[in-house]
Image: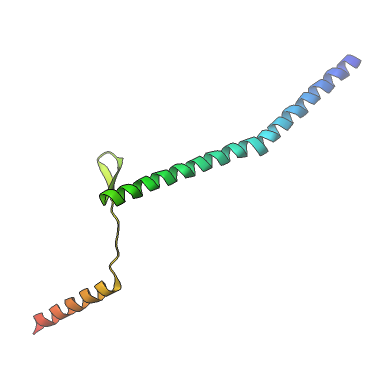
Length: 101
C-alpha cells in the first residue's frame, strides 16, 4: 500500500510540473516569441518602404511587380498650388469668353 501511495504522489507531482511548464510557456515564452516576431516584421516593412522611397527619389518612379505581367508604377504626386489653380481657372474662363465673342 505504501508503494501505491508513492507512485500516485510521483504521478501527481509530474502532472503538476507539466501543467506549470505549460502555463509558463503560454504566458511567458510564447508572448516573448510573438513580440519578437512582430518587431522583426515591423522592421522589415520599414526597410521595404524606405527602399521604395529612396528609389522614387533617385529615379523619379518605382515599378513593383505584382504577378504575371502586372506592375504597379509609383510616382511622386505634387499637388498644384492654390495660385496655379487660380491662374489656370482664370485663363480657361478668359479663353471661353473670347470664343463666345
